[in-house]
Amino acid sequence: MKHTIVLSIVVMVTLLLVSGCNTIRGAGEDLQQGGEAIQRAAS
Image (cartoon, rainbow, N blue to C red; front, side):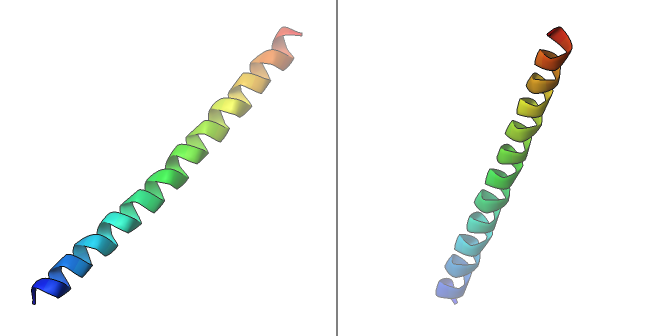
């Protein structure tokens, strides 16, 4: 029983970390595109 609970917690934490990385990467790409738009507007 304890083994199943520990395994479930490990799986949930892993999924949260993976989804968090994708979110942070997406936000970084959005910031990069925003910066490029500002550079184009300034030149």
